[in-house]
Length: 380
Image: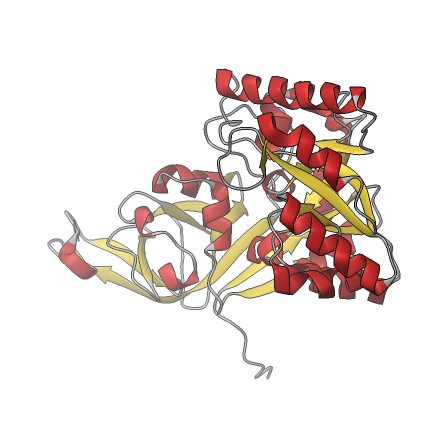
């Protein structure tokens, strides 16, 4: 008898699907190259598995948000003997710079002060620090305001120890293909590039498009742009408001198990708040996953899971550790049977995008909310 204790809830990440998604994104974006964004531990799914799966592709490298994420990727790539750029896309704090320069991480320049600190650390380490200049074209979060950028950039490129490889910016509204603000950002970015070129300043890597813009603003993958960034599309998800130009598929399947099955009489109320009352005798299964595992409260009385290839509606409020579902149409259901919370079973599927619509959010929120007790398993 196998007595090995297994987690009740697990998420399976299909690395074969991940690679196919990358290839489809790369084909769509050509001639621009693709930077794969794996911040927040690949959105909670396991950066090591993602990096190993994508290291053999022609991706331009990996994007992260902060130094510990960068160092983790540097270690993974070193272990597998692959050379790829690891780039911090947000900001760099003064006390983080020296370690990042020594590690060879590509750094963002968000102002002249940060550029000078990176320059000083690079000179001290007797090496070149690769940097990308971050322009604020309208995100209002980080970077050099685009209208003020040329004199600042002219100083940055003269600093010793820096290899000013790239320039980039970010969109707040690229999920809307008709958004005029995004078009103005593109034009202001291009205007800066033209002015910089007249001053003798050019960049090998020019990028403004993330996943939304790859789908909705294809011009951002054409010259003068040379690179795009993708995160959520790698997972097979999209912003709910934009186009879905890419034929990508969900990479993850979230599974749990049935804890108990009961025939409950009419009039029984289910869960906290008694939000559901059975109108007739009903077979109800309690499943071993709740909001601590990533099931949104918004699934309460609205969502469904899949058991035996059948759609089983969620009835009653999602609790921290459990949820109750109607299994009247699922055939014979027993304790221990597999439950598909996200993924495909038979002809039906549930995706992170489906949950995002119910929650009024986007797929990033869903994927990043999978709990710490959920086992991550790479397949394919």
